[in-house]
Length: 111
Length: 110
Image (tube, rainbow over all chains, first blue to last red; front, side, top):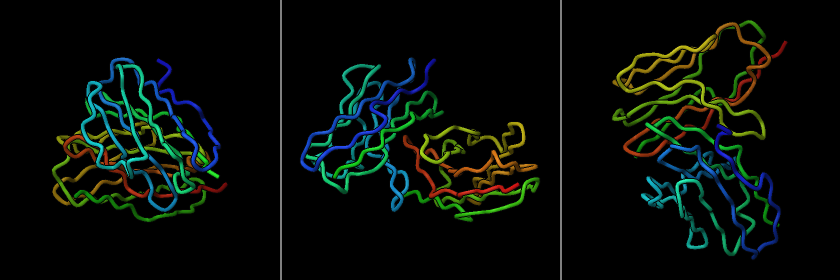
C-alpha cells in the first residue's frame, strides 16, 4: 500500500482565495482524520470521519473550514476564504483498530 | 478533557547514550498510546503502539512502557545515534480520537 496520500504537498495562495486539500486514505481503513500543525499550538484535530460519516467537527476553527468524505477512498478539506492565520501544515490520517497512519502533509501558506 | 504533556521539550545528547523520553496524560481511560517520530518538514511515522492492556512494546532499540494508573508512558532509546534526531510525539487514544502531546525535540550529536 502507498500509505495515506495527500495533495498538494505545498500550497501558496493569496488571502481570500479558496483552498482545497485532498487526502486518499489507506484502503480498508474505516476512520479518517484531519489535523493542523503549527508551532504555537502543535497538532490539533480538526475533524474526523468514521465510515465516511463526520463524527466530530468541534475542532474546525470557523465556518470558513469545511470537510467532506464522499466515499471511502477520498476526502477534502476546504478553506474559503483563506486567511494568513490559516498558514500551517495540514495532515490527514487514516486508521483501523485505532492504529493511525499519517500522510506527509500539505504545507499551506496564505499571503 | 485529556491533556498530554511531554518532558523534556528538547534534549541534546552525544551519540551512544541511552535516553528516556517522558509522556504524561491526565485521563487514564485510554484505549491505547502511540509514539510517533517526526523529522523536520515531514509527516509522522508510527514507532510503537501500546494497547491499554499492555505494559510495554519493543521495536529494535526502542522500548515504550505504559502505566495507565499513574498516567505515564516512557520511550526508551538505547545506544542513541545521530539518525535518531527528530521530534518524538506521544498520543493517547481516548474514546474515539487521538490527542497529541507537544513533543520532545531530540538531537544526537556525533
